[in-house]
Length: 441
Image (tube, rainbow, N blue to C red; front, side):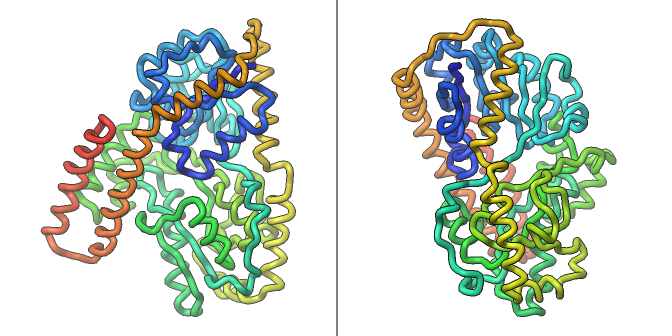
C-alpha cells in the first residue's frame, strides 16, 4: 500500500522522533512517504494517490498551526484509511477527540490502555475508531554497537537531566524533578560525583546526551506520564498565565486553585525512551518503583529507589559495588536492549498488521504502487520547504536557552525589578517573538 506519514520535520531534531519516523521507511512492507505537515499546505498533495494517511505524534492534529485548514479538509475528504499516533494526551483531549471525529480517523495509536482511552477520549465513538496501545519509544539499535567505558572507568557516579514540567501535568509528573532535588541533597552526604540538573539550559540532545549517559555509572529515572487531564485546554492556559504572573507559586497552590479536584482521577504512566537508551549503553538505572509499561522488572532491570529516599544508603552501597551493579546492568542490556520484542522493527511489523487489518475492513481497492521516484520527489520537496521553519525553530531554541541560563543565574534574586522583567518577557516579549518567527503568539 501507499502510505503518507504526515510529521513535523522540526520535531525530527529529537533523536527518538527521527528514529521512530525512519523506522517506517526502514522496516515497513508498504511504500512510505514522510512529509512535513506544515510544508504540505503549499505542496498541493493529491491524497488520492495514497491508500493510507497517517498523522505522526510529532503533529498536534487539533492545532491549525500544524495542520492547516486546507490539509485538514483534504484529509477529511480522503476515502482511504486514516490513522493517528497521539502522545501528550493529557492536554486538549476534547479538541483531539473532535479532530479524530472530523478527520474521520479510523485507527489511533495511543500510550493509554483501553479503559483510560475511553475516559480521555470521551467524545469518540469507540465502535467506529480502533485504539491500539503502543510505547513512546523503542530500543535505539544503533547504540548497541557503540563502545562504552567500563563501569569503574566512568567519571560520573550518577547523572540525570529532566525539565520541570508544567503544573497542569499533575502531581505524578512532579516526580521527574523531585527525584533530582532529593537525590542531590542526599548525595552530598555520601560524596557521590553527580551531574544532575533540571534546568532547561542544561538539557542535552543527540550525541551529547548519548556521551553523557555512556560516561555515567548510573542514571536516575521515573515513569513518564501525567495525572491531570485538561479536557478543554482552559486549565493549562490559566495555570500558565498564573505562573507567569507569580513565578514563585508552589505546585500545591496551583493544584488547589485550578485543578478542580481532578488531579489523580486518571493517571497516565509509560516507560521513557531513556530507559532503552540506558539499557543499550550499559548504564545502571536507579528509579522509583513502577510498571514501566511491562518492560522492566524492579531490582532486576533497575535498582529501586524509595520515593521517600529512605533506602539511599543501600542504593549508594549498590553503586559502589561493581559486581552487584553489573548484574542489573547486564540483565537490562541482555533482556531488554538485545530483545527483539522492543525493537522498532517489531513495532513496525505490528503497525503493518494493524494497518492491513483495518484497511481490509474498508473494502476498497488498493491504489497502484506510486513508485520510489515519486516518493523521493515528494519528500525532497517537503524537506526543502521546511528548512526555513527549521532554522527559525533552532534560533528560537537558542534564545530560549539563553533566557533559561539568565533566569537560572538570577533564580535567588529577590529584586522586584527582576520579577517584573520575568513577567514582561514571559507575557509580552516571548509571544511577540513567536508571532514574528512562526506567525502565532
